[in-house]
Image 1 (cartoon, rainbow, N blue to C red):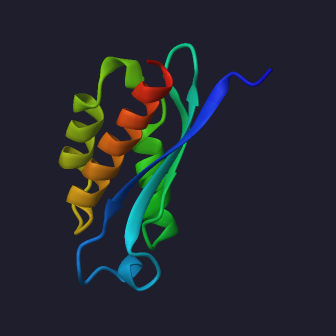
Image 2: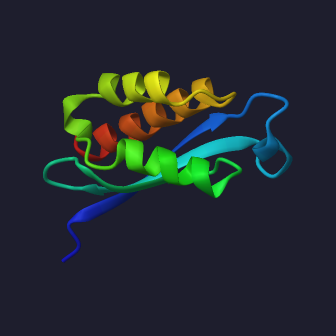
Length: 103
């Protein structure tokens, strides 16, 4: 039996971003423990591998059962790029989809 969900959250990318030439939207995907809501692994569609790895490590280990405020705070405090608002919107969308699975 699989004890995780694979959930994706989406948001529009701002103009002028490198990833915009490949994607119109930014996606954050996460493998999430069903029981505790902990993000086991996360990734996103930022243009650089370094950016994708950074967001993954920032979100790994957080529980979505605790809400979305802390993940948003971490993004605001630690990510200093053009995609900040898109990342926040995507994590909020991912959180909403996770909550719908547990309603």
